[in-house]
Image (cartoon, rainbow, N blue to C red):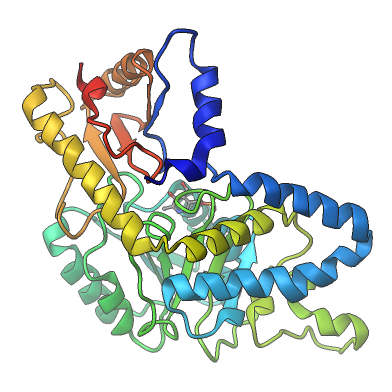
Length: 391
Ligand SMILES: Cc1ncc(COP(=O)(O)O)c(C=O)c1O
């Protein structure tokens, strides 16, 4: 059904398989989605614009491509102000830019969970070496009470910053009621939602909280545009002045240099500096294609849920020693899960062995220590039974 948009990656994967072997079943899509065919044309377009326009290419990039992409992302997430969507090559840069806006000579209290992605976890650990930085990590488990425990602490403590994932990277579980918690946050706390495993996977409407949260995500995963293009939406009226700032942050200043470092009242406040925009071209091409073809995030989610149900049905009758309901980490498979399943194989060695075994059957997946992750995407065949995962 949707495979026709991904012929080149599907064909590439089939060609790279050993001769005579079946085409691989790509289940590492939560890590890196295949790119739709249209991205080839988009990359060529980037090259042609660079060749034709040389230094003048920045005009179309800043006046056409970035606004087109911001408008499309805003439609996907129901964000009211496309020009408050900042872009950068990765989310780490954007999040660190935000952190750098706090007065680092004063106490900086951060509330988060013990389930955040390495990028943030490592940065926090390093920050914690500073005497004035204090981090409170709420245990993600049990998920039943996570929302209540997190919100209670958010209001009880005096936090400058709160940070949590929309969907946890190690399990696929969606943080229960995160948007509600963000909407009720105290005025004094800046709130970041790490939407990397939610964006373009789970239908996400930020309309009501757009002016309360920073929402970060990237195009490498579910959007399938590749690495190098991440974003962060900025609440209205944001006056933060990042310490870590690049020359894109105040374009006007180049012509009219002020004594003080100036900041724009739009996404450029959180801009860095020169980057490669080929992924921007790819992302715009995908967003336009999907809009033309009526492929919404709701439809993607529905399709993926169908694939997940098929997988579970096959799993339940397979009797596999590791890939079974007991080892599957979940909370609410019906309404509160992302686009991959995680199995706790109890030891890293068991998980590695299983991953290698799956590879011999052409099933591509990934692993984080003892956790084996199997993902779902619209480029998986609608008739796929996932039988070869289990036998
Ligand atoms: C939850 C989450 N956040 C962020 C990232 C990416 O971080 P960065 O953009 O700093 O590479 C990932 C990548 O796997 C992720 O899973």
